[in-house]
Image (tube, rainbow, N blue to C red; front, side, top):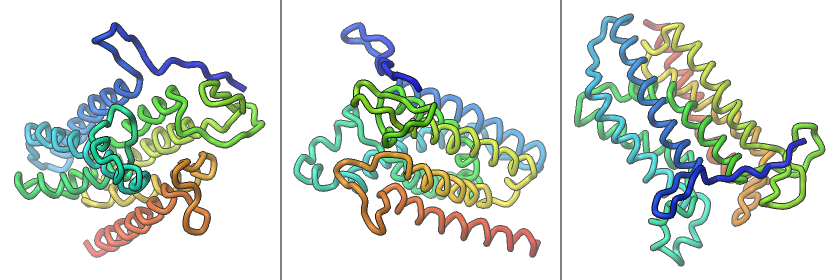
Length: 266
């Protein structure tokens, strides 16, 4: 058992401060950018392609903006719509917290379609690269959630339980670490395995695998995470995260099956 008393602020010099959540976003973007360019380079080398790395740099700008806008609007629409209808100006106050992974994912998909149309770049390939990169950002983000004492789980007596003393005196499931492990590390390794097996040569397949495995991991781990206070349990006693994950799971299954059939035909 562990007593959590970590400070979410790394340093604060008045006008200059840095918190772990901001650092997690920065680390996810920088490592993801580097890893994404590495993947594009490997595709060019092994599959005799000639994708422009400078265009990928431009694409990252689209991704960053889409994560912020999509993540915020996703939280507003999916998790706290009534509050923001009454306080619309606070939609802009992203520094107060409130981002949705699924909203950010939708933002990336939309931005990718816009970018690929303007720059004549294979949209499914870009999404596959993002899928390979995304677990890095998820890992850092969930570690930051843990440090911030947020998105924690229900009470448990398991030996690895955590008491978030900023929350209460209960020992709880560290559900943020479960997500960091499975949606971050395990998912990264799964996608790396399929990438190394040449599945990036079938655009859309890796994206389907990402949606499939992420949705399964998220759906299961949500049972070990306290539901959002303003929503509670919804349809069939599921959380909003589980409902959205189920929808993305179906999309992932469709992509994997359709691309698998395409692979057999070719």
